[in-house]
Amino acid sequence: MGTKLPLTGWSSVAIHGGHSAEPRHAHLTPIYASSTYVFDSAEQGMDRFTGKEPSYIYGRFGNPTITEAEEKIAALETFGLNIPAKAILHASGMGALATLFLANLKAGEKILTHFSLYGGTEELIHRVLKDLNIEAVITDLHDLAQAETHLKNDPAIRMVYLETPANPTLQCVDLEALISLAKQYGKKVACDNTFATPYLQQPFAYGADFIMHSTTKFLNGHGTAIGGVLIGTDIEFMKTIATKKHRLLGANSNGFDAFMLVQGMKTLEVRMERHCHNAMEVAHFLDTHPAIAKVNYTGLPQHPDHAIANKQMRHPGAMMSFELKKGLEGGMAFMNRLQMCVRAVSLGTCDTLLSHPASTTHFGVSKEEREKYGITDGLIRMSVGMESIQDILHDLDQALSTQ
Image 1 (cartoon, rainbow, N blue to C red):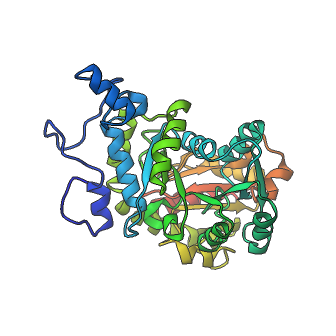
Image 2: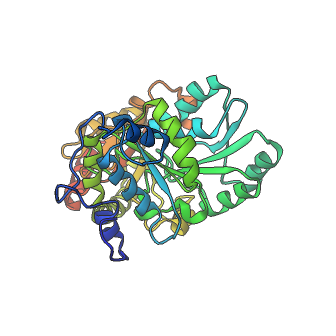
């Protein structure tokens, strides 16, 4: 950290965490664009490769810009917890997931997880890990007795993988209860914290072993760079097994994307406060609109996971989904009428983004499969942005006017 003064405020850590004095006295850590790094002697090269002299070797292994992003994220996920953690920055969230799974699991072992995961995670599990003979046991993790039955009776389960809030139904699972249960049976626990960010939720506080993010989303906050991160509390494991898998998979980030991420994280607290304020206003507006059949937002008391979210999150967040009464036709008509809000996948940017899963991201999934996970024909996913709330509400209202 670039300051010797103990930092007690979240935004202070977001701004100063991970930063070291720059040798040429630049205010900000520059974008290091070098693919390789020079050795002063053959002996120094050997010392760096053996780890005797920690330093930079090759761009795929990291650089100073990437290091600052990693240390800042680790500091935010452990803020106030007094827990050591190491982060490894990746080229994407999917790269971080690949490192997580392949560093922890081998053929014949299993993951215990739940319904309604991010589509990319589901595909990785079913299309890649399955071919490696690593199986997913998918169940309703709201049912702790059912979760315990799997953990107790299936020794092949090595990891519990949680995504809370989940994408796109905003389902939440109880981190404290599930992590405690998993630890009773000696299982590792990983949590996707992308939707919540460390500002709203800290899974390490409940004993999680790993946290991953798509840094593309709220951490970057401006839609300028793809990235992912894996953070772990077993420092030796992260420095050795996880680092080796990461490097061999070639899932490394780069100086430019890391620089954009560092700048984005500095404003995370103030951005999230605006995102969250707007989202609550939008949720209440949609909840009473005659064209809407259902709103999935944990800030509303009728959401089935309202109590769980209140227990483990500082605020329900900026993500929601809602169902239009007119189904597929209504969903597409609504999307076509939007004027300010943006029709796009992804989330967490300053502007409001909406997508219609049934006609886009889940178009290739059968209706029966989709609806099993709560992804109906009329479902709209919304990442509430930072625009003036009256403009967001006006755009939604006019787009719903023909419903």
